[in-house]
Length: 417
Ligand SMILES: NC(=O)c1ccc[n+]([C@@H]2O[C@H](COP(=O)([O-])OP(=O)(O)OC[C@H]3O[C@@H](n4cnc5c(N)ncnc54)[C@H](O)[C@@H]3O)[C@@H](O)[C@H]2O)c1
Image 1 (cartoon, rainbow, N blue to C red):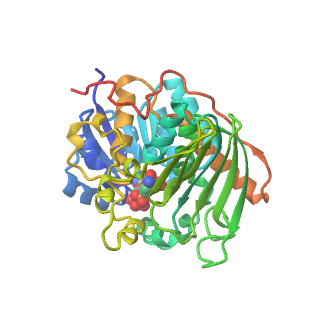
Image 2: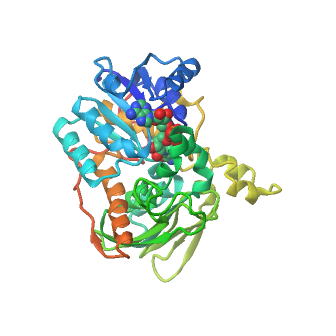
Image 3: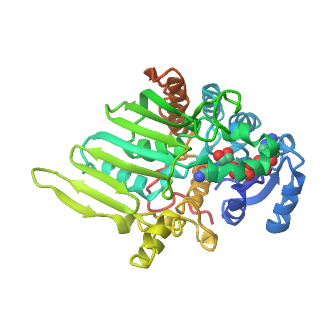
């Protein structure tokens, strides 16, 4: 068995808070350090979690000899250069989404991962969400035929996130909040592309120029001069299917925020409307309906069906954090059982797949090549949208070297004990 992970977490902000205990309790991890630009955030984390070390800054952490890995939880525009620095200093990398905001940074991460053999895993919730698991397993079993068309989206009105940005950015928060929606495409793309076992080769996209609040989107209003609050892209896949992905940041919507609307094959289709999940198959002339809602919705949500204001609670996300029966929690280390869940129960899967990849020497499901295939279409689509929807080629990094862990395995490949 390899030496245990000695990991340094960068960015003691709002998201990282949920991950410190997961890394601390994970049996593959024996040391957890932290750093943040705000020393008081490190102190607060230490009081709460009793970490093993606080590092002065990113440089000290990334070059520390007592660490063999880092986990990046800083803001979205930092992930690319931090992952590159970490790989260059011989550290395995877990990174929150997105992978990076520049094509060149993504290519450099892939080059370094290939050259060094170090583990890189992007913590992407999408592939562990029930609808993605469902479409992936049914499609892989061959019962859906060939994929024809699919739709997915991530609907998150930025108004609900203004305070999230103010927390770290202070009075410059608007500059960061106006990120091009397509620079954060991986929740949607990963759900569909992992299920399709395919990648996008071309895109054409259209943006919605925000004219509602005139606060964060528009020329000179954000770091990217991004005018769009909503962008939709059409993707042509290498298997000839067409996919529509929408990244909406000014939209009246609730929960689910990230979901597949439809995944249509020649023999069967999956469709979703809020908490209604339908599977329609037509293997021959007859059409069959299967209600798979109870398999895909969190068990806790199903238990409250029929209560007063049930749907109201659902769209407000009341029971959205827990596990659905289709999620194979049996393979997760029991040491994590007592911890809180989040984002449809996906947090533990993301951390565990990074640990499993490191321990086995196999590629994580969200290895650099896969992560790039989820991330690059959005970066190119934003350019297409800026050009009024021109058709553009998407660079493809190819398949990862070596064996890749399956997202849908029943059991872990190595016992940590
Ligand atoms: N569903 C998801 O997958 C999901 C959900 C939420 C957030 N995220 C991602 O997690 C990341 C963090 O989000 P958040 O809401 O916690 O942000 P946040 O602003 O609350 O936290 C980021 C922290 O990183 C620190 N930081 C930035 N640069 C640093 C540096 N050079 N050295 C040390 N510390 C540094 C900041 O000071 C801040 O405390 C974002 O990239 C976001 O995209 C993903």
